[in-house]
Length: 85
Ligand SMILES: [Zn+2]
Image 1 (tube, rainbow, N blue to C red):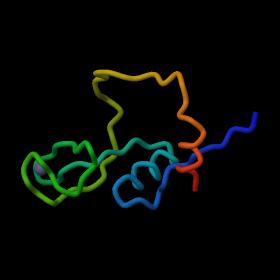
Image 2: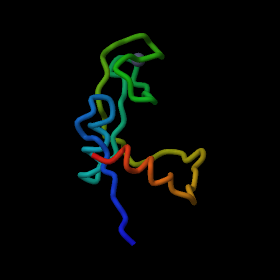
Image 3: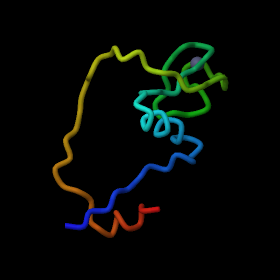
């Protein structure tokens, strides 16, 4: 079976730093430098305090798992082709 691998876009301004760090084995998240809250989705604007002083932070590795999803079917091949670089 010929299976294609879709690589994340590490050049994307919004999500690139996440995937670049993941490739190095690090888990990072975007956080607000003013109020200290994590930002999900990773935006440049903090919806909690209204600040624009945000940056990527390395996660400590501690946390709570609230939920997860297991995908048992892959997307149709047409989707894979449209996302391939
Ligand atoms: Zn904030």
